Amino acid sequence: MIKTTIPGKNGYSIPVLHNIQGTEALLVVISHGFASDKESSTAQLLMEALAQHNLAGISYDMPAHGESEVDGQHLRIAECLDSLADVEAYAHTLAPKAKIAYFSSSFGGYINLLYLALRPHAGQSAFLRCAAVNMPELFEADTTADMRAEMAEKGCYLLDYGYGRPLLITRGFYTDLQQNNAFSLYRKGTARLEMIHGSMDEEVPLAAVQQFATQFSIPLHIVEGADHRFTNPGGMEQVLEAALRFFMPELD
Image (tube, rainbow, N blue to C red; front, side):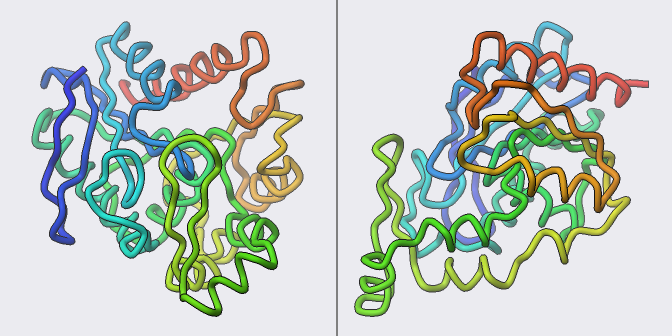
């Protein structure tokens, strides 16, 4: 694995992790979940699985996540989309003949859908794991009265899940979410999509994902007994197997 930073269009560097050799036929850009980072177990396992087929992956830290040099003032939807675009462009310079595809988890899935809907994109296929298709609704439901009071007083609050890096949540990010509903912004046909979700997901309810998949005619794999992180026995193996099956047609 190669760990480095790349310049971003917003004036700060973006930490990345990749295993690109330069001769691969397919590169998968990997977007992590909320409060996660580029070195998540999912990202690293996927890159290892891709390498076994002479393919490669690249993951990155979204603004204010992982080793990002910026704080929550830069945790904005537009800057998350910019980071994805910058990483995609960088990956293409390392292997200019490779096709681009996407693998995204949770919040990263939400960002990936907005990216496909709102930005020019090189990739034409995306595999979404436990995608937070209803991120604005989820965030609203998880915002406590104390958080709202602090937001009203200071314009921000610190969100600490007890793992990863605590996130500074600003009024701007909160507004961004309300203005970016994937159900209304996504357009059918922007890319070939497939989704996988656990029946016991406690963070992103399956019903919302089923609604999104139905609305946009997206194949959805439901893994019985799997939670949000697919910690059930064999759960992550099922994710990797499904993702690899999905990506293989890109090589034709």
